[in-house]
Image 1: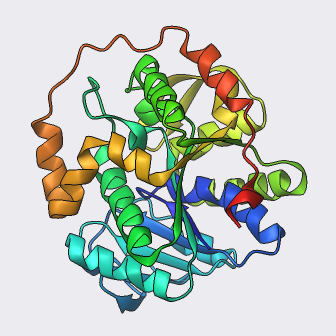
Image 2: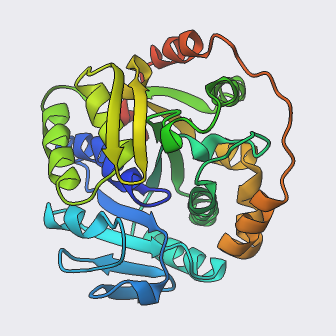
Length: 305
C-alpha cells in the first residue's frame, strides 16, 4: 500500500498518521510523496522511472523537503516530481502500481484538494491538483483503490479558503457517497505519530503539520504561530484533529483544476487558476457544527485492506 502527501511539505508528514496505524496492523506501507520539484532539483536519489525517484536519508532538495527525514525513520520512501511533464508523472505512478501497490492514499493537509475552483481563494492548489490527477489516473489504469485524506481542514495559509465553502464541498461529496468518514489515530499509533511529528518538525517547518499536532494534543484555541510561511494568529479547533477520508475519483471530479492537470501538468493548472471565475456562493453558515457531525462517522483504516 502507498500513503503520502499530494502536494509536498506537511502533506507527507501528516500522511504518516495513517501510515503508522496501517504498519502497526501488519500492512506493508511505502511512502510516496508528490513533491514540488523537477528531477534535477533532487540530489542523491535513485531514479526509478519517469518522474519517480527512491529517496534515502541522504537525499537533498531545496526548501521544505520531508521525504529524506521520513526515510531516516525507516520508511521505504519515494518521490514523484510534480514539475516534470504529466506523461512522466503517470509513468512513475504506474510503476508503483506494477510493483504491487493495490491501494494508494493521498493526503492533503489544509483542504485545497477539495476546492471546486470558484472560491475567492484556492490556496496552494496547483501541486495538489496535479498530485490528485496522477493518483486517480494511475490507480484507474492499474485497477487499484485510491483515497484522499484531508487533515487540518481550513488551515491552508492560515485560513485563506472560506470555511463556509469548504464545508459545502464536503457536504456535496457526502451526498455523492464519496465521504467515507473521519480518521483519528488512537492509542500507541497516536503516541508514535506525535513522536514522529516532533522529529519531523525539528528538521522541517510545517504550519499544517503543527496545527494537526496541536489539535491531536487538544491544544485548542487562538495561538500565535511563526512557522514556515505563516506568521500570525490561528484558532485550532476540534475538527482539526480529524482526517476526513474520501474516495479519490469524486474529489478529482469536483476539483476543476484536476482536468487541466491531466492535459498539461503544472503549467496548465497555473493557467487555469489565473483564468478561473469566482462564484458568489454563500456556503454553509453553521459549518463547524456540520463538519463535527460528519466527523462522528468513523472511518476504520482496516476497511481499505
